[in-house]
Length: 128
Image 1: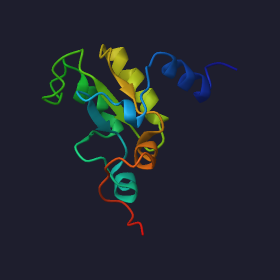
Image 2: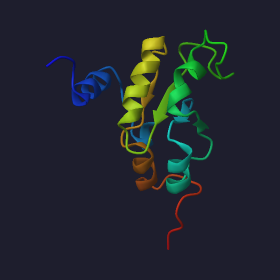
Image 3: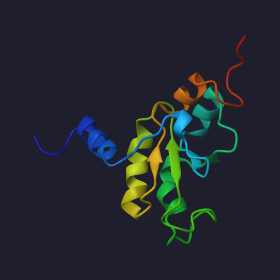
Image 4: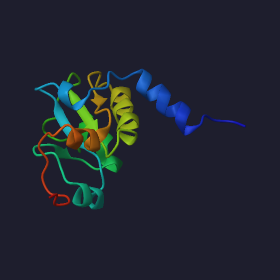
């Protein structure tokens, strides 16, 4: 059998990252939500996070790309990517590191960990 399993690919990606918990997100970091619109609508959002869906992430954060976001103007930009639970975001952050964004990482536990930590969220389901 050729190739690596997704578990092996995920472990390899995470071995390169210094993942952060919600309490450890650096104050100067750009929080990037890569969840699809339907998931954000269902779960809620982190106020102030940039929304960049996964399929365009590399183009939006490569400082050499004509399609980059204005904030993505340097390779030492501290980027913290998050998804719902912290799996896809690990792969995405490793991909940003492959582009040269050496401070890119992801949020361990994703949006769900942020919400469980009692940090600000907007939208999503109404709780009692």
